[in-house]
Image (cartoon, rainbow, N blue to C red; front, side):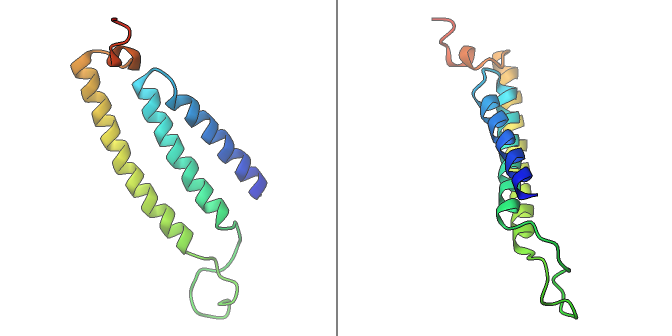
Length: 112
């Protein structure tokens, strides 16, 4: 199962890197979002995909699933949601002011 997850994470990182390197500002934002999702999956996969009981004291206390990676990923999801909202507002404002989302035109290299 971990090999499949590592392959999926590799595909997500590859696609997000391609999207970040494109000329469209919206594709760059989508690439950053996908990069965050790939990092979340990577953290979950590296912590070990194992089955176990909930981390409650009881008869199955020896074989419980570690809740720390899930808590870290939940925190990272909240932070990435805030960064995504900021990037979308920044991209929208840039489009409204400059009437383009082409990064070459925003740099001014297409005019000169």
